[in-house]
Length: 259
Ligand code: CIR
Image 1 (cartoon, rainbow, N blue to C red):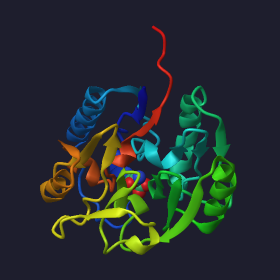
Image 2: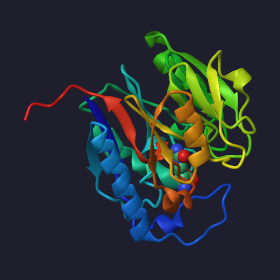
Image 3: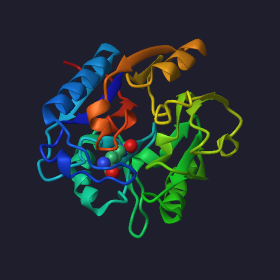
Image 4: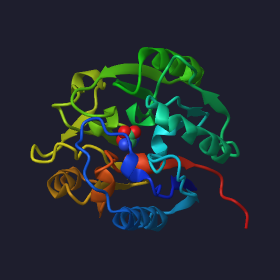
């Protein structure tokens, strides 16, 4: 079955890291309501949601994706590029330990999971303010034996690679070509975001369904026209913390638990 690890919205999310956005007030209750609806959608789509308690001292900790990359064979615990986020790791390690062998990105490397795009056995890692070549070399050494090819990719004008491109299938990407060049992502079918929706490339694949943020109906139509089953989810309040849809969960296959 699919497990989705999430974490409650921190009461201090207003103190989150921001790189490409101006700070605007975040309504914590609205953010929590959106997050709960996101979790409910994951449950409806067949995930067992494991929600970790909110962390009052870690403003960005709802964005669990940045702290680990879970593959079938191993979970890689990252070393987040923002120092304020490194304390998020210990609880995620404890959560993932029952499911996977753990490996770690070590200093001086930095890596955010938001920069790691897995498409089949190709793993593309964004070179951004949060992820560097030392981490890419370490990542390659960890997963090379499992048959993955790891590629560094240049990214422009956004926080993470997955703010520029995500996979809706192993051979199909949703991409904002202004932010990343498709030439660096292998020979895959590309669905471009609608030009009026530059942030729309961050979508979540849950089994056969694609979650798209409600703010991006035109891109949702494009994905649907390409033959995918699309669900819309509201995520506008967490977007003020520069978080997109993928950041709020770690989704992976795990054996069903006996009751
Ligand atoms: C940060 O700057 O780290 C958070 N405010 C947002 C992280 C979003 N994570 C993601 O896109 N994977």
